[in-house]
Image (cartoon, rainbow, N blue to C red; front, side, top):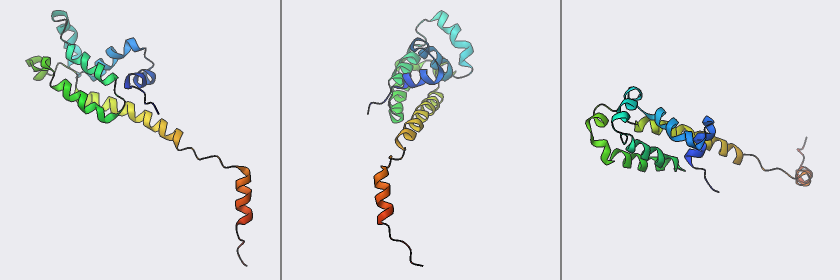
Length: 140
């Protein structure tokens, strides 16, 4: 059974095209106060979002929730994440916000796939008839 990548699930749940995915997810995962300042910072430094974009791209390839922790570890230790604005002012993507988004998206998919696999097996009509004929009746 082939699992679907996070990006496909996310786009499906939010009615996005693959081209809209990165920008939409990044804006949702940014710290709330960072949403105001990051557009201004990108005017001065076009590579300011490089680490965030790498993180969003890594998350796009996830198939399991447990793989998120490896991607977040790489993001936290990304060389660009050492600056004052990114570390102290938190003008970057929040790993906790991203984790919640990933968990919610993959959990929704797991519920759907579990419901599909939990369907009872169809019983053959002849099998049902045999079972009822062979069952002893209760004595009175």
